[in-house]
Amino acid sequence: MKKTIFFLLLLSSVTVGTSMITDTEAEIVRGKKLFDAECKRCHKTTDEKSIGPGLKGASERAPSKDWLYQFVRNSKVVINSGDVYANELFVKYKKKKMPAFPKLSNADIDAIFTYVNSENK
Ligand code: HEC
Image 1 (tube, helix red, strand yellow):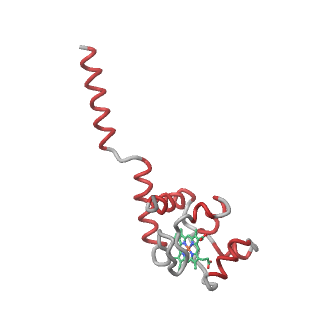
Image 2: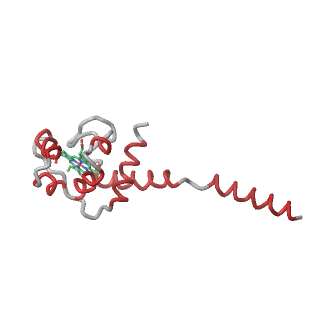
C-alpha cells in the first residue's frame, strides 16, 4: 500500500513537471514581449543594423552588466559620462539617441537579452 502511494505521487510529480514550462522559457516569453514593445522599432535580434545596432551578441560585447543596465535605462547619462564604448556607438549611429527606459529593471533587461540570445542559438 505504501509503495503504491509513493509510486502514484512520483508519477503525478513527473507529469506536472513535464507540463510546466521552465523558468528560462518563461523569461524568454517575457523578454520577447518587452523587446517587441520597446526595442523592435530600432533593433533586430540578429547582427543586422536597423536604426540602432543589431543586438546579436550585444550583452557579451557590453563592457559590463552594469553598463548594459545603465545604457538601456538612460544611454545619455552613459554617453555624457565620457564612456568610450558608448561614445563610439553614438558617433557610429549618427548621433541618434536611444530613448531612456527608466522603468525597466535589471531583471527586465536580463529577460530581453535572454530572448535576444535565444534567437541566436
Ligand atoms: C528610437 C530607437 C531606439 C530604441 C527604441 C531602442 N534603441 Fe537601443 N540603440 C539605438 C541607437 C541609435 C543605438 C546606438 C547608440 C547611440 O546612438 O546611442 C542603440 C544602442 C543600443 C545598445 C548597444 C548595442 C551595442 O552594439 O553594443 C543596446 C544594448 C541597446 N541599444 C539596447 C536597447 C534595448 C534593450 C531597447 C529596448 C528596451 C532599445 N535599445 C531601444 C536606438 C534605439
